[in-house]
Each structure stands twice: as structure tokens, then as C-alpha cells.
Length: 364
Ligand code: DGT
Ligand code: MG
Image (cartoon, rainbow, N blue to C red; front, top):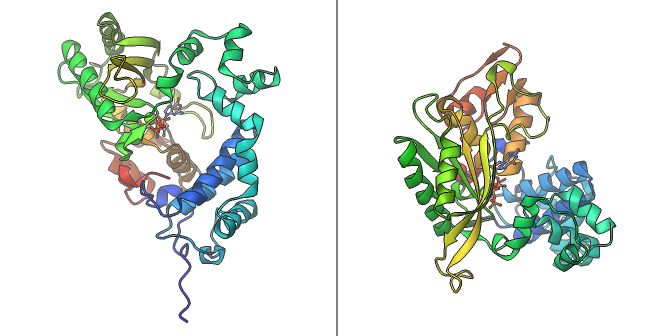
């Protein structure tokens, strides 16, 4: 019998050094690991969550279906606990641990609550501790909700029905047409999972820019008011640009570095195109509108295309391997103490000394 080369033999350690297609051959394994990652996140164990996410991400990049643990070889990034889970699923088809998590009251409740727009792990956890278990509980016990959470609850079913690609494109066209009224020449780009080739997603991420620097200023508020006046917006809150290049980017690992663009979190009222909303005539869809000045556009595009794990790995690679700070606004070289401008995503990969990974291969 010829010994097969381990499937994971050539696996590079950072997800941004690998190609990760949308479809892969190890779905049952990655689902199990991602459930544990999610559960660890619900318990506030970020490190443990990341370990499971990393292991899942490695499996997504394998060239074929794993049939025995040994085929992995001495892969970096898959810890002992993850190996145990993989082995269980390979041998028994399921992991008892994962099944137990999925049935646990805490996991199910946390999942129910965090699926409300505007509810994070902290809030969901507090509600769970207070004994709340259902969406009805929230209403009956007059739980204090933010305006965002109220909207999230009101449109709960729609917002937890996947957005189809056709719907995302339709939202994109609507925004594009509206933008042309106020700023001809401005562009609207569909980012997020759809740019990576996903056929459906949880929201629509749209990036707006204009080829002439500065022309994009003020666009967002005019755009949103107009969309609102047309009855297309069910909810929105906007945030002003708070990023100044002269401050320098934040140190790596600091939270929310992508959140400093002029940005609008919204819920659109989308005319139904079949599916669950068809009878009613419309469907609520989560839409994020982000405005980037043209000089930052490639960084914004790279940062908003995802996946979240791919982004995290890019930033980790930049800082640990290159002593650079990457965020959705800029790339900063801490050794040479200067920003490295880029006119395209390709140039950012070049600055980092990474082989270019096209969007469809960033599904880490
Ligand atoms: P999905 O669930 O189908 O919408 O999948 P994605 O990949 O489109 O995920 P999404 O929409 O949450 O985010 C897309 C990318 O944009 C993600 O890689 C990170 C970035 N991003 C989106 N929102 C935020 C945010 O609030 N903070 C930060 N730091 N990054 C964000
Ligand atoms: Mg998205």
C-alpha cells in the first residue's frame, strides 16, 4: 500500500496564506467545530472560541475529504480538543459533546437572543441569567430594549431568513440609483459574503466611494434621508467618520478598528421577490452602508469582504510577521514608521509579501 501524503502537509499556518473556497469537503467536521466555537463565544471564552474557529478554518482549506485523523499530519492550528471532536465525528458521525451543546438550554437561548439585531453576547447572557428564555418573555416582562433591538424584534423572522443574492443585488441597484441623484460618478460595491461568492447571507454590505477625494463627504446623510422619504427604510442609525489618518491606526488587537467610517446600520423594506415575504409584498433586510474616501477604498474593500476569520488572520499576519498594522483604513509599517498606500487589494497583499487571494478564496 502506498502511503498517502498527509492531506494537510502543505498547509500554511495563517488563513490569509491559504486559499479557502466556499464549498469544501469537510462540512460535518467544520459544523461541529464551529458550534463549539460559538458556544465558547457565548461563555466569554474568546481564546477557546478562536481555537475551534482556527481548526475549522484549516479543515475548510484541505484539498479533500478527511477520513482519518492521521491524514492531518502534524498540522499547526488544530489542538487536542479539536482533534478529539474530529475523531468522534469521523468515527461515529456525531460528537456527543457537540450534540449536548446544541440541546442545552443555555446555548439555545443564547442563539435565540443573539439573533436579534442589536443584541450581543453580553446582553443575551444577562437576559439568560435573569431567567428569560423566549422572545415572548422579553415582551411580557417589559425588558428594556434599545430602539435597535425593538426593530430587531419586530422584524425577527425576516432578519433571520437568509438574504438571497438576487435580493442583495436589488438593494445594491436601489442604492446605486439613489446615489446617482446626489453624487454622479459615485460607486456602490457589494462586499461581505456575497463578494466571496456566497449565494445567500445575513445582510447586505455596501461600500460607497467617489473617484475624486472629498466628494463623498455628506453623501450618506442625504442618501439615507432620501431612501427614508421613499419609504424604503424601516430602521437606521448612522455614525460619523471618526478616523483621522494623522492619529495613526490603532494598535493591533484593539477593538472595532473597522467601525470608524461614516456608516449606516439599517433595515430596508425590500419589495418581495418571491419567498416568505411574497404574500405580504415586502421583506425586511439588514443593510450596512459604509462610505470610504477613495484613498482608503482598497483597505475598506479588503476589510469588508471578510470572512471575519480571514480578516483576523490578515491582521495577525501583518503584525506578527511584518510588524505592520492593518485595518480597514490603512496599512502602517511600524519599522519604517510610514503608511503604505495602495490603489488595489492586490497592492495591499504585495505590501504584506503575501500571494494575492481572490475574494472567492477568502472563505476561511
Ligand atoms: P453574512 O453573515 O452572510 O453577512 O457573512 P459576511 O461574511 O458578509 O459577514 P458580515 O456581514 O458580518 O461582515 C463582513 C465583513 O465586514 C467581515 O469580514 C468583517 C466586516 N465587518 C462587518 N461589520 C463589522 C463590524 O461591525 N465591526 C468590524 N470590526 N468589522 C465588521
Ligand atoms: Mg454580510
